[in-house]
Amino acid sequence: MTTNIISIKGTNEGIILTLNDEAAFTEIFKELKTFLAKNHLNMKSDNVLITVKLGYRYLKEKQEQELRKLLEEEYKLNIETLESELVLKDQVLADFTKKQIKTYSRVVRSGQTISSEGSVLLIGDVNPGGKIEATGNIFILGKLLGTAHAGIHGYTDAIISASYMKPTQLRIAEYISRSPDYESEGVYLDYASVQGEENKIVLNKIRAYPRLEKELNAFERSLLNE
Image (cartoon, rainbow, N blue to C red; front, top):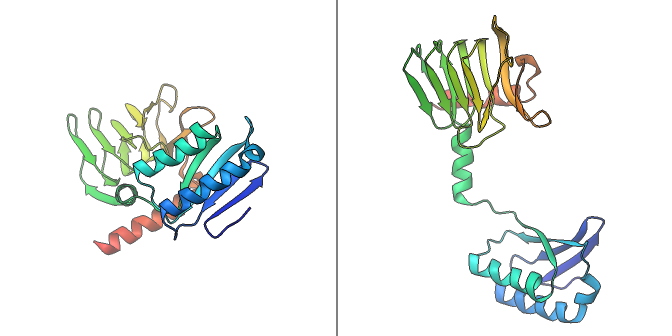
């Protein structure tokens, strides 16, 4: 069923409700109430989920509450997701910061910490007792002998890479490495990442890193823009 304001389509996964992002919310709400009053029995099923596509529209909290009350409470329909093409400013800034790479050239000695927003490239070693942490990825052109914590605000896709890796501890988001995640003699040119199926931090050779080219291109652009 399609009007100038709303479109409803059934799929194998459920029902897709598309709202015209150029119409006023009050107009959409009125049209939707009229439609539901006539057709809600055809949509009613405990197993059917509804995806609401908002287009380039941002729903205010009160508007979302009204929409959920209409669909979920009055007509007992199951909303799976509310999808919008818009990205909130805070999310854009968070993603931008995460992708920035800050460069340090030094040795992180025992008792010292490098802490940074975004990703970090360290040209130097992290000695035992030293620590490096970042909200994004950590790249070390040197020895990682201390502690490294990437994705400190919950970014589980972060990685930790080092020319030589024999860390005291590896952490990615809330995950902490446990022996024997890395060999006692250390390893060369490896990276650590969280493996979803294994639900732990594991090491792989850096050449196997699927996003390596993308990350290096981002790093090159960040250097050129400095």
